Length: 547
Image (cartoon, rainbow, N blue to C red; front, top):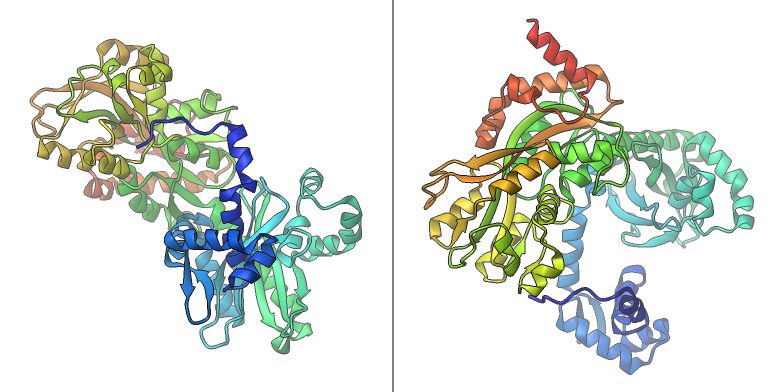
């Protein structure tokens, strides 16, 4: 594993015209252009020497990203690129949330449905990412993976019509073109959908309606594709209304997400159960793991990309008050209830002589993924212990950020020496490691525990009980923090009250999937709140107290 630092921005900027940039340009031809390419055709399309393109093709083929047909003498997409695309597509929540909406629209109309996304960070384009086709009819070829200029495509126009003036100015569409489109954009805003007929030999009528995030910012479009020979102009309004309803439902579903934890641990175990308990009370509830942990969950909640989330009391407090790593106060956030307690585990290879937190600086260690609560806690502990990143490197150590399962794989492979996990008790991944005798726990120094609790009252002094894990005869001093179910101030109080009641009354369902939820009683659920409690949750607790 490399210990070297990242390239400097200047070094990164130099390569787009170099080998990496040229290789990416080759791959884009297979995504945005035709399915198969010969060397000379691809060289002509890229305006590059054939010999140079041929070398790149052979490298990409060797890595499995491309494959070669010796009969046709052409290259096509390889299994490795297909695997990468499938994995990335599976991790993108937008497509997963859209699936039931798209299926319903296909069933209603008997026609193909496509999904396009819009990224406000790159407002010049839309990208087609999903399709659903009717089973009994010839599938309309969808431009999956293709990017289209925001003013040059029906999905882009549906988005452009609902952008604010400042966002339109950043879209790269010049003022003359916007003036030319203004009448059409006004019609789209009034009708709620855009319509276009392609110029292909077998023309397709496409009807698009924009989707919105929780703050009513356009973030994509639902597109209905109808072959022109089946399209009746008299049904345009009917089709347009159906597409607009589907897009509106998808917008609602995006704002009705329960954002959960990562790929392992008590958050992951409890996510599906909590989502199931909420679903009868939250229309369109979708439980989705977070790619960025408790802190990212709070950012998404504040920005309207979810309804509820799981986080820690420490992260919730920091977000609400605008403390690092948050850049500004997240004043829309509200607490619903505490769910469980997490404990910090400092795990080292049994052969190391590490006895304290400061000794970790000479090890290669992983404090979880960046953006997750453990990583933020680790940074705070380093600061309190007066240990800098530079001093870690000078001592021969290194800090790398893996998720829990990957950290264990790297630990067992000998690539890292220590793992720091904020997790429920007991942690199954560490329990297995402890049984092998190859790992042990390091106690957290009492002064650090007290300093951390004083700096952030969301953290509590705690201990991993004696005998919790094999070869652990004594309690291990550490820090604890509560897991919190959070929402936003504008959620309907009746809904939040029903959600609070459902999760609390069925808490044994959570205990069955993870013993980490064993502390969940009325006192624990309401205790040590670090931000205001939502009025709906407060109504439930008040009613319980007086019943």
